[in-house]
Length: 178
Image 1 (cartoon, rainbow, N blue to C red):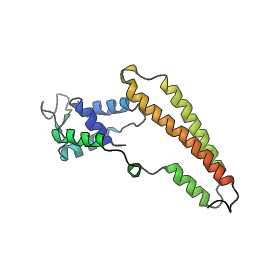
Image 2: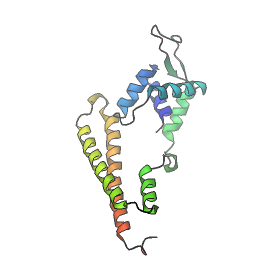
Image 3: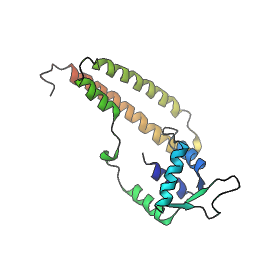
Image 4: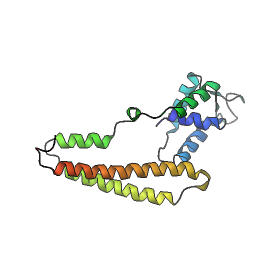
């Protein structure tokens, strides 16, 4: 997930305070990816250092000491390049579940079937929660939230299919398993 580019996209709508950026980011992602406010300000500092955002023209701080940030022309160009560039599979973080199962299969004494069952139960609970979440979406930001929730549901469904595949592979006699 690119917090950097997410903040640039929000700033393209107009200048914002850090807390506004955090709230709008979380609303856009249906709170699937909560942000720590420190992460927001650290990212804003880096964006400012790189010339992609600047402190708003109203001055450095308002009467409450808050700083508003605005996207710069270089920031707009960076955001346009990000939107135009496909996301590579290599750019995504490692999948902890894949690593866990690979390690479980090769670690003596681990009940791999139990690991799979526990994950399947957790994934199914997650799917049920996501399905309920679909019914409570905010109409004003429904499209963005719907896309995020739908993506998460599709990933969970794919995970269930992959777990089925893992069970099938592990059920084969060991000479068939590469």
